[in-house]
Length: 134
Image 1 (tube, one colour):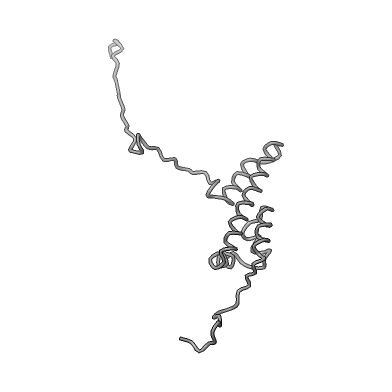
Image 2: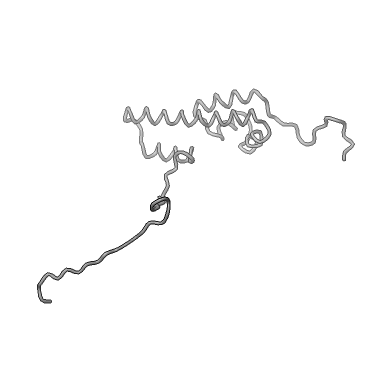
């Protein structure tokens, strides 16, 4: 295999630190995006994804951060609508871009018939004789 001593780790050492988990959650509560979090940690989106893959505690922190960020932005929209100080269409588009799983509007709506089956179409055409000669 290799002549390296036991415990030797191949590759570049990780810059991951467990204390990042707390900071990530704090940033989520401020509504920060993935890019903003990466910037704050002097890292990249790809590195954050890698840390999620290799550190379950970091994955948990990122999931909590995203939930906090969404709650932050939803609260801003709620407050803005109550005070009528928000452009609802811009806010809605921003939410769809930031949180597509919960906020993306579907352009297509599936319609099904009874028990999820096909929709039965029928068209009945009747000609009524009005009694007037043509």
